Length: 67
Image (cartoon, rainbow, N blue to C red; front, side):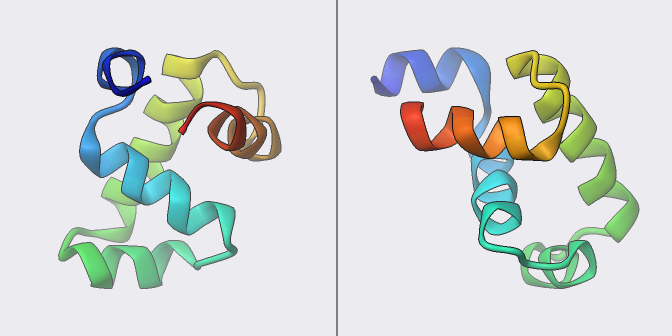
């Protein structure tokens, strides 16, 4: 399963998705990862595109099944 994960989401994207999944605010994620909140929003959009999820809810379901 790790090989599948590596082909889809990078380590930072996995961290961001995990934090979003538990309801962490984008600003808090940015602070914890020492990046801007804009970067968090960009990564979120990249995550949705990479896994072909139409919204965050579907992305969280995807993550629950695959990560």
